[in-house]
Length: 503
Image 1 (cartoon, rainbow, N blue to C red):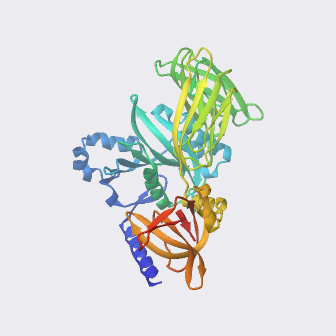
Image 2 (cartoon, helix red, strand yellow):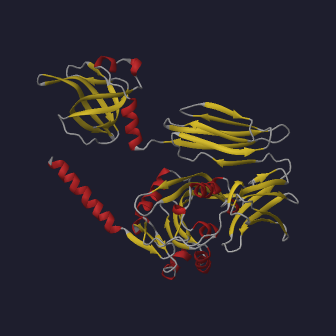
Image 3 (cartoon, rainbow, N blue to C red):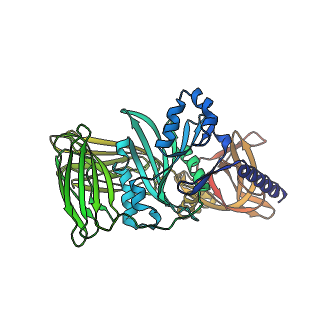
């Protein structure tokens, strides 16, 4: 008991020290704050301390005046450099079109939040800037933080991979707020995301502004495609009754603009057939206007190329999977979409529908290779590859062990037929030792008089919080036998369990 009290005191003192080391950064744009430990970063830059760090900036080969302008033009509130881990953490708060339209995503309905989320995965929101999002899903935090969009991305510039990373994004207090963990020199991994999530846990809003009068509703049931082989497509959606909806089409190779217009019906629906004049990359701005209402705008990037097999993926697998993975999108008529998955669970599914949707079972822990192949006769096939990982959280692993494990008799535990099966054994901790980074526990499934019986050995990766002689329920995997040499020089075999969890 004394050991545990001392351990608790040490943990408490370390926690207090960690809190004391953190520094709070409060931002008037967006009205929120975060905490960082400056010791984790080479330097933490803000718009106000740039002059004090001019020498450091120039030592990194950056132009100081350009960096000052970048902070202003990109609405950077904080940029923390971590050269040890190849990371740059960036906080921005931007008053853009989305911020004007939504103001606070927590106050919008599910359809508006869904549209904002899908604008990331289908490339319509940030694709023109070179971002490709492999996942985007909402997570709701406690207290006043509410919803943030969790996303993983890769960023390309000039045709080359610039960086990968993770973002947390929301719209609140009239700003699009983004916490961005940019990773350089290696592919962003769960350690990078864990660092971002740690920062997220410190985020607090200092004030929540009331909702003002917002732009009129502008939702899409058929948005402009990210890519197309046809010069004509239809934009459909809903707005306010009798609102005038205009699509302005601009080509990167021309200063001339084309406009297409429709008036929303009594139920608010609109439909516009858009025809592109030639192959190329276009920006399409859709505007909804009505007298007495605030105008709403949305922007899209469209690539038009004849003969191209156009595929628009709206939902794709993220790097880290959950129990189920959904892949949705659309393609050409008469095209075939095939999804194959290899890993802990293997199978292949196909669809010949223009709009396709696949629900994949990714409940088993491990690495997955998911390949989406779209083919159509006379056109080049499109192939998308996703390398993903399903990792259980401690809570998920514990729940699965409890739900799926089976209690074996001592005799059955030793049988080779049960090797690899989840087991649940109740017994007593007899001995505990550490060797080469592993913890070895002698575990007795029974007691006879003053002696333990039915002994087995348990291998643990971490030191368990247990007391010798106490009874526990052990969850693990029945494994190979464990060999012990007796004092007489003979070999004695015991059942062996790869331990996960004790309670």
